[in-house]
Length: 246
Image (cartoon, rainbow, N blue to C red; front, side, top):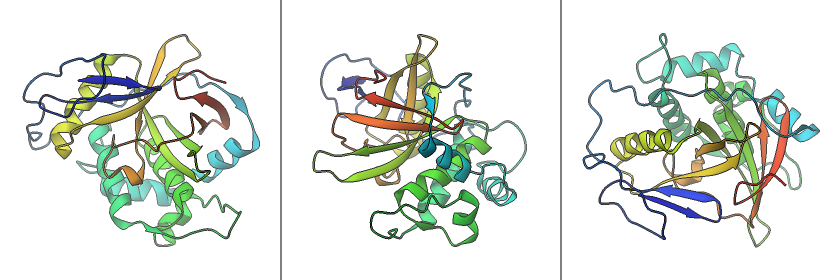
């Protein structure tokens, strides 16, 4: 079922925990394990990206070097069905699991972010802070043909965090398919995403891939009401939690 709270959306499959109003029932049986080899939903492509060019987004885009051979080799090694063929969300999630399982959190010096290139994270032993993780995750998504953005936000106590989101479509039908697949693959009770107003006038649905969430689509970082999205085009945009660009 669906929940919209302060611009964050939560989908719950049949029998899952429900919160709030604006509910939509997902087909029964969605929590059954996926059949062997089930590819999962296709990865949609976002044709245009909002925002304006700026130094932070450009630095993130440069660091997310998804065409680097080391990144491509890592992604190929961890795709759900191995390299070759059209990538799906099953591949995105399999690569996410490999990063999640092998990552060691290491703080940057106080007040300083290294913006570690994705290729360096791989060759350097999968170590870094949340931004480095998000950059690697975004590079993996783009390498698989998806559209990623890196989110930076602060909570109400002033603690900062960064994480990746993947574009999953412009309709609730697309989100429902993704939610069903996640419920089946991870026995998840809820799936979370951001909704943003796209430049074409359509809604954009962005699935949470935060390492802190524990699984793709897990709970979203509780920000202070706004967040900043950096796209790998080198553009960035600031949003309110209701999805409105500020």
